[in-house]
Length: 381
Image (cartoon, rainbow, N blue to C red; front, side, top):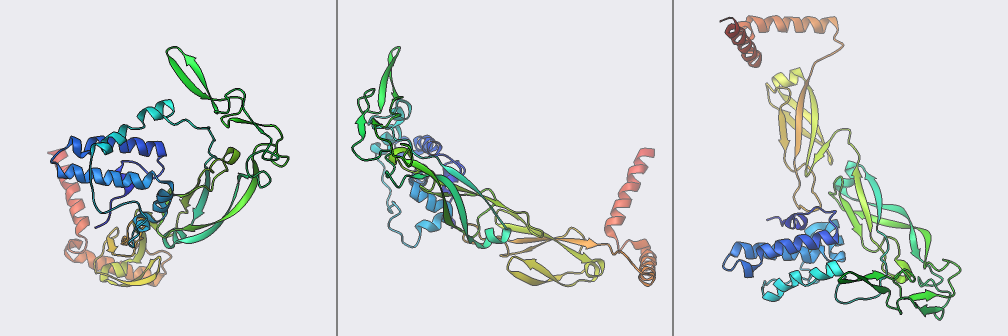
């Protein structure tokens, strides 16, 4: 049975921030926690699903792997996925839900120097439908701020030219009194680093970062869809003064295909046939993303008829089985007829009229005109 998408389990989409993931987890964990639903096996199961989803999505490396490969990233008896096969509940789990509520609001219990993480970046990557369905490796060029190789991101010409900030005494934060509350803020003098650079690096001018472009080889997993995002951990801009780098998001756009439309795992297309095949039946070739296949059109096929060819759709990132191909039949009216062809059609038209005025040959027309007659009869009644 297919595993439920972790984002759906938390009621989120795959662009959710870390804060949104944590907030959704707290809300659902409170709702389904076994201590609040004693004796209810279904809520215990849901709590386990929520907890498992949060443990993956709250971890940047695990989330990056899941965004690229889905549940397959944690299969093949992978023992490093952070889970075990048993489930236990205790009041400590319940307390953990609230453990950092005040930390989210007032800055947490353990204060440390505020090193600003580097900015996240986004790269818009356009793919053909074939590339998205089958997967591909793309080389992309990313302009970004990287750690200065001269000062190793410190911003200082040498290690001995940093002094403790006099404004915050090296803490990186200062206390400000606002009414009854004491509020901590980032020190405006050292910008949270706790130090002042006396002899700045000449290459980066004390910033610890320089502008560079880097070529990355990006593996696009088979089955990725339009508007999906791939997250590359720590491939964004370098943080200030040696802080962690941000992340790089690859935003996927799939070009419109001349034949196929995609909706989730299914493909659809329109297949034109002439009215002879539509009336008498016959065998035609139908295109798929892996080649052409022969398909039998049954006699008396009407325009707009939808045929389903199983397993000829897309195998998505998160589902191991392929979708289907839906073919809509369009009966094409012939054009540019010569005189001989026109005469043949006229003879066919006359023969259809002589057969009970075409009642047997055009049942939909008969039903339509009978309905029209009843409509006008009711108006004049």
